Image 1 (cartoon, one colour):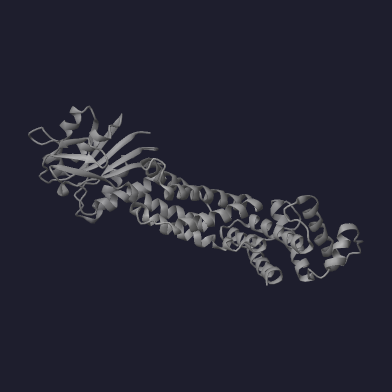
Image 2 (cartoon, rainbow, N blue to C red; image 1 turned 90 degrees about the vertical axis):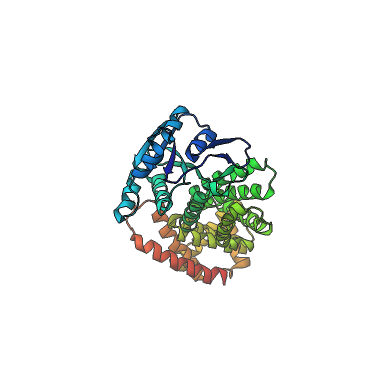
Length: 415
């Protein structure tokens, strides 16, 4: 792992100006933005790689006067080098630039980028390289900078930090992964990376940022609950998540213009968990079943659906759905005996608590719903036994039957 600054060197007539970062009084006067960034970052063991065309090398890297960017960086004891790139006028130049930049990136590098003098199509090429390298070489983008020489005031030019625009891409990729697969790690880590500096800058007093941080934690909790089939937790965390998303929406987000796109992304998450506005146990768990199906989490979906039938039996027989012993065990035994007696036509004796329940509430459940439970159990058991059974449904059948089970559940238990 190495710390690197990647920069491009143009062919303009650069004039000396004092460059400075926002919220910092300290500046550095030079005609080369690359030198200023290197000095102001003050990173130990920083390696500077400057990409140059043939003309830029002659004019600004190693000019005849020998007072170019190379000599200035060497005076600062900075490890630096120039890498040749074409001028980008030919079609093949695009791929040459891509490969030349990519080849300078090593695994786990931490990279700063200066795009001040990256003309024409180079910024697009460069961002493509970085996005590719983040996956292929696990590099980290520490900062993207632009020196606003043309907008200087009182001979001082602001260095803009554009890193957030790279993070917007990560937000988009993260939320797409979250909403399509239920995987939350990428999204939540990007949120943490984005909000950390903002929270430090506000010294922990910004309520909106703190609320978004809380939201990120609840997103991780809820989608992990789904993956691990935590029925009680998924209800609690899902309802909390929806409530926090509503609170964020109600606050004034306009003052946080730099992360405005993030709030639009959160609306997509809100839409996915909006069913929690109706605090109905049976319906909430059913929607979780549908989410698991969407995410390809079939075993989780079957398990949630099976337990939701037990929820239904508990609610309609006066049993406590939150209490496993004895209530849920009684409900499970009840529907199991009804399946054996009514569907399988087995001769069994029903006694005790189950007999009492059926005498008092015998019409609460139809044979259709009992049959659904029995069929569902067979598929759920096959998933739990990892195909090591005599009867093994095909992979496609698990998906098709789940659609049918969800449809039948809605018909028998909801409508």
